[in-house]
Amino acid sequence: MRPAALAPSVVAALLFAAALCRPSSATSMDGLLPNGNFEYGPKPTQMKGTEVIGKYAIPSWEISGFVEYIRAGQKQGDMLLVVPEGSYAVRLGNEASIKQRVKVVKGMYYSITFSAARTCAQEEKLNVSVAPDWGVLPMQTMYSSNGWDSYAWAWQAEVDVAEIVIHNPGIEEDPACGPLIDSIAIKALYPPRATNMNLLKNGNFEEGPYIFANTSWGVLIPPNIEDDHSPLPGWMVESLKAVKYIDSDHFSVPDGKRAVELVAGKESAIAQVVRTVPGKVYALTFSVGDASNSCEGSMVVEAFAGRDTVKVPYQSKGKGGYKRAVLRFVAASARTRIMFYSTFYTMRSDDFSSLCGPVLDDVKLLSVRKP
Ligand SMILES: *[C@@H]1O[C@H](CO)[C@@H](O)[C@H](O)[C@H]1NC(C)=O
Ligand SMILES: *[C@@H]1O[C@H](CO)[C@@H](O)[C@H](O)[C@H]1NC(C)=O
Figure 1 (cartoon, rainbow, N blue to C red):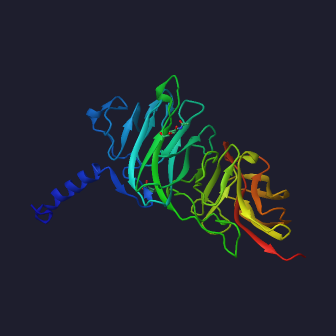
Figure 2: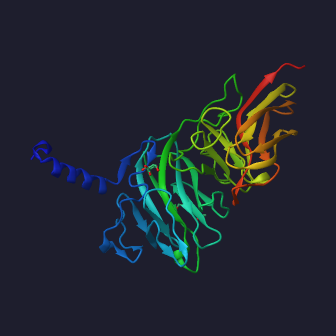
Figure 3: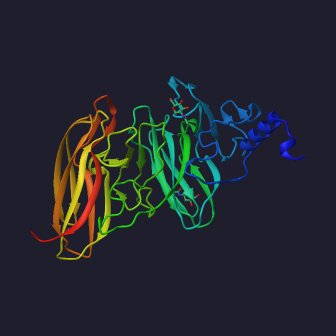
């Protein structure tokens, strides 16, 4: 029987069924993974309380270990569980994981963005992997008031199917204390090159991980200790804490659509190593501002170029705005480390549990004549 011979309602039912049981490899396009927000759940017979029974019970996903299917508004003790997108999320217990295969193009760079919330455990970590790459993302510090943060991680595809795994390696006494996960999206990255207009790559931060249209808390670029492939192409996040990637739809951004917010004082530094000619004079110019997110007070961004440094004060009213700054330096070697961090910690005036900080954008490095 040809599909055209089917009644529209039957076709619709088949399409719906097809959406529910996608083949194990969906083709990747920028955006949410198939059932990436877990709105399609297990059948009642595949659940024991909130626990999901059966490897393939959640459409498009393969699970292992103690995975729970959580409905928005569900209570745990006296804690109300909030879900950032739609009505459902999953929770990964100790050693539990979720996995999905996605078609990718070998050799290309990709990033995934997902939202996660700690529940009762104080320190959570998630191991995100696409074999043979993996990264352990710490989530011990909360940056947003509702407990949810979005995280990015990137890899270079070595084969044309990526098996994306999110694993909770934690060993908590209570298996129901694992993190909640929701909204998993993928984005192909196109690492920009340095040009004669800017010796820095991706100096305006326009190239970066997927940001959900409906989330107003940006995306954390985790510390990249064991990772060569940055979700923010060109840039490394050094030190212990994340930097936040923000968009002009939800924040005030000095230039273009994207920027970074230095949310954890000296503990979150962003850096790039550039080729320089020893003895030549360079000008590092950049914008320092605030994201219009009630992050108020005296801020200072410190910029480094090799051993040269400048402190740029910025008085934030938390309502947006920025200023330009410059660091002139004579290159001491063939490679110069450019680095930025915020001198102080700042908390949002509307929410004292959320870290925030100055915004950095539009970073340019050019060789200049000696004055
Ligand atoms: C993270 O997961 C990958 C893939 O399963 C594994 O090879 C790696 O050892 C894990 N890392 C840690 C620290 O658990
Ligand atoms: C985004 O938010 C709008 C308005 O609150 C809502 O109508 C829409 O369904 C949301 N989209 C997603 C994908 O959740």
